[in-house]
Image (tube, rainbow, N blue to C red; front, side):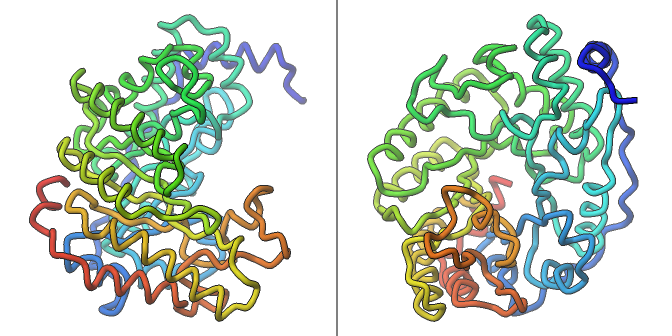
Length: 384
């Protein structure tokens, strides 16, 4: 029988009172590090950095060559969607951790660490959650948020190095309460939902660093500089309020249509570092729309753009992690996004490995930057 809207809402109301709390799963003993001596992780580790990658569940499940590449190159992994609410809580009272558990076991067996992505976002919500939050009182919505974080972060307690507690919370134009993006969470709980989410995570898993993950704060145009100013002001306020935030994440979907201003970026990262926060590059890739079709030329320009960004990143002592959003060109999200597709229709070459798992000029540029970066291992160890 197909459920009606009324039965879905009834089930959702029950979920406010008693969502499923899954017990932590056994993930086995930690294995020896699997990355190779010439890998991105090996080069990054020399100065205290960690290199990691997002791993899409569909590719991970079906492609042994892909799993080998992930094991060879990365010291940290993150699920793309498998820890988001739309996957974990597809229906009221139901949880599904199968795909997330598989990646956690893989990482643990290969001596890799895990990031968590993401606890609170305005997207990736199952259909039953938006009407639930729209009708909930503030106490009910807070209870739902608390139980959601208990469910997912509690399952992986002690297994996650850092969680993206909130994701893309700034509005694009600076409007909205406290400059926050309109979202079901903001509607249900008001601007305090951001602080609340960090406090709940800290209660559930105090070993996991809480991270605010944000987009479009990396490049050299006035509207991104304005966003950086807003980020710094909000971070200062959160710290003054005693919010247990330990990291700020720059998504770093770098686009070839916008310049890099190394001076602005350097100042921004340094300001965050002076606050005592760690910094993570969480979703790095290169959108090559502005570059020529010729592969050799395009790959060179992608590598050069990446180098101009990562040289600043790797020089900042507060930067702990550089995560690419996958490492394998055929999987890049850029080919599916209506505003990111190349005008000539060619697939983007956004990531370190090509369709044959070959190491591209981007891979070599990343490794060179990591290898040549100043040694900040001691400073980074204090922030972890």
